[in-house]
Length: 80
Image 1: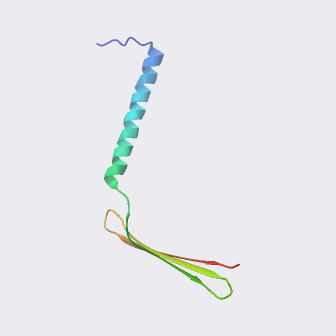
Image 2: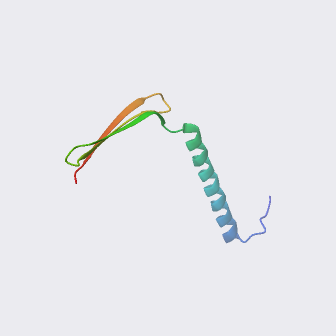
Image 3: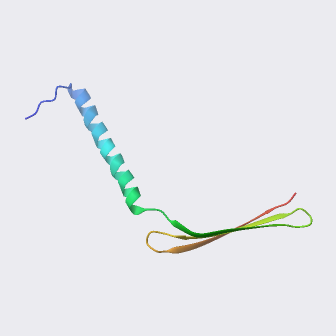
């Protein structure tokens, strides 16, 4: 059996760090393989009224990695 040159306390700490690094690398790799939502289209419309009111509308269409399409509409009105 291999005997570590490190004291038992440092050896245990080294083992924990190795496990943590492996877990972090597995999580990072899995996030790269899963992927993110892809933005298909994005439009912004801004209108300013005579009284200075600004209406802003945003429309976004995204597609997730499993093929699901999501449409999001956001409207914001700002008054002076």
